[in-house]
Image (cartoon, rainbow, N blue to C red; front, side, top):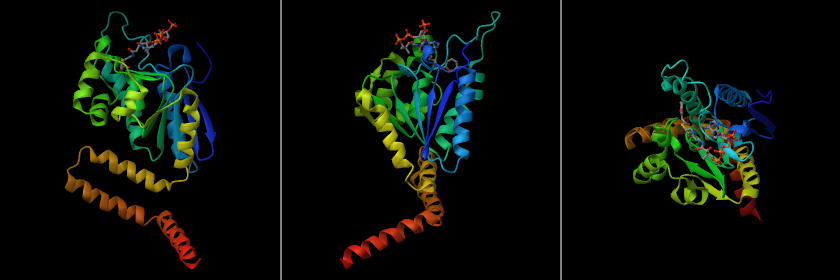
Amino acid sequence: MSDAPNVLVERRDGYRRLALNRPERLNAFDRELHAELIAALREAERDPACRAVLLTGSGRAFCAGQDLTERTFVDGVTPDLSENLVERYNPLVSCIRSTRLAIVAAVNGVAAGAGASVALACDIVVAARSAKFVQSFSRIGLIPDAGGTWTLPRLIGDARARALVMLAQPVDAELAADWGMIWKAVDDDALETEAATICETLATVPGEALALAKRALLASAGNSLKEQLSLEASLQRLAGAHPDYRAAVEAFRSRSVRRSGS
Ligand code: LHQ
């Protein structure tokens, strides 16, 4: 077994770059990778200077989903896959969705199975033109997990989600962007710069606003319009009471005064 970290962490100005680092297994998730990724996300969350995370994969893939070589069929005992989900994937996806940090996925190669679900759980997904998203679950007799059955139809609609889930047909980055599955597809050699630029921009956006917007968007999936309007009112109360809002409005006003005075 290699001693290399399963997640490479790079602290940058206002954000962190996390790279899944099991390139020989196409960054497939095993117990250690899960533990290190959750720990790295939690640590980033505790850092007040950190606003965003750039999540990518080392080597030629983003993530091939669950490590299928991890021991599951031991002594003829049928594995209970729900344990793996409840203990590892579900907390990871919940963390990505509920953290105050903006999570930007830079999908540098294939994102398959739960690897695709994790990528699509991120707030902003940019993919290299050569990358592809594969709902590979049905090929191995499973259903999409790690939030895939929730995220996919919401992103691309029921008709496309059903076909992808059942046919396990790969979707390339360009088509994924056309369908609204991801934010954008970029040339392979522009991926890192594009994702870094997005994170640098996010690092300048008032952090409380990002966190509250994430809360509102997450809740919108299960809320009626009435409930969502009410939630927006209470979250906007919090945003408006934050010093970031006052500072931004004062800066806007003093710019307007300068413009009208010149
Ligand atoms: C891998 C993997 C992999 C280990 C490539 N594991 N080694 C499942 C079960 C439990 C509970 C929770 O939920 C889940 C959810 C899931 O994620 S199910 C879906 C699991 N993932 C897959 O079914 C994808 C399996 N991989 C593939 O279909 C292909 O490898 C893809 C299409 C991703 C890439 O194909 P290629 O570019 O042709 O690469 P390759 O197949 O040659 O893979 C390179 C190496 O990576 C190879 O190792 P080797 O030692 O032969 O060079 C693969 O064995 C290894 N690898 N995926 N998931």
